[in-house]
Length: 139
Image (cartoon, rainbow, N blue to C red; front, side, top):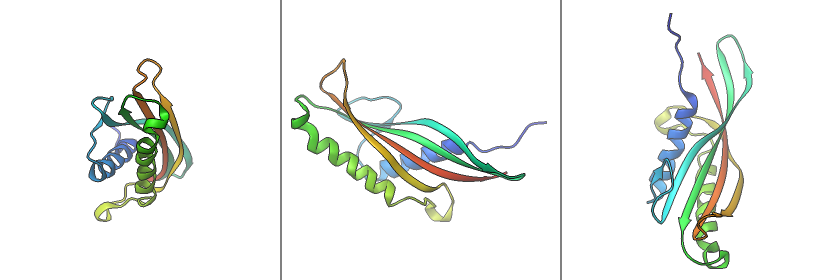
């Protein structure tokens, strides 16, 4: 007998992707390309609690904003940090995400932002944003 389930982390990934695409004119892709891009990857799935008919899980995802621009950090830091701050605000404004009354997640928050430069391509700069949220999955 086949089991019934919902791919909850995909719902979270799709929801965050939709928020980002609606806010920015930057492609959300599976890998970086072009001058600017955003890549979203699942990072962690943690059980918080469960009952006989539901689970509450925490999902962590990595949102990687990447820009390609020549010059050192002093040359690009305003643009890079501005994008990260705007993503943080967008996600803060959608901590309990229920578009059109359809529950997607709650308790969404940005846990950290890490800035880095690609070691192989010194013109590639990244802001790695760790986002976590909670999903109550009724079975």
